[in-house]
Amino acid sequence: MRFVISPYVYWQGGYDLSFPVIRDYATLITNINEERSALFNHVRERIFQESWEKAAREATKHNLHRRHRLFEKGDLVIVRAIAKDRNEPRWSLPHRVILVLRNGNGARVEDLSTGKIVDTHISNVKFLHCPDNEIQINEWIEELSANENANQDCIRRTMDLLHLEHTSV
Image (cartoon, rainbow, N blue to C red):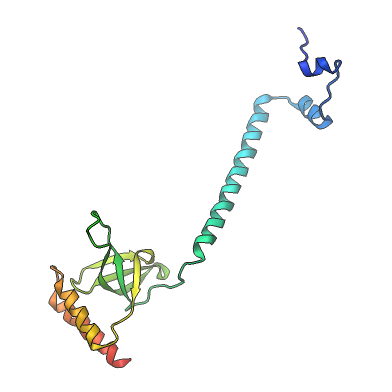
């Protein structure tokens, strides 16, 4: 077996001038595959740790401007519509929360014009204020009645509730 020395060692007069730690590490290698897999696992764990830390920083940054509001029964909301066309409205007509789900982050809401009930998440809604006066209530009645699938009984019941809330405030 022929002993091969690197050009670096050859030019240094046959002496290995690398750091002692590196020289010791090179002599300790018993199984190359063990070393590679240990290095791979170490790098993998570091990448996972760095990615989790970055995700935590991003989540903290995004939550700075988040409103800390949860659903309550009776809230008025508009629900984000999944628009298939750019010309379709992105938000629905008003809905009322009839049941709170998932620790206040989810709700079952009823469409005020049609009476249709859907489940939604807080990220897909905007909260509304109740109409303050008779003019606003009449505008709501007109908007809700203009819907082609409008249920007049549902609209009447909703407006009765709005009248009651308006007179009690």
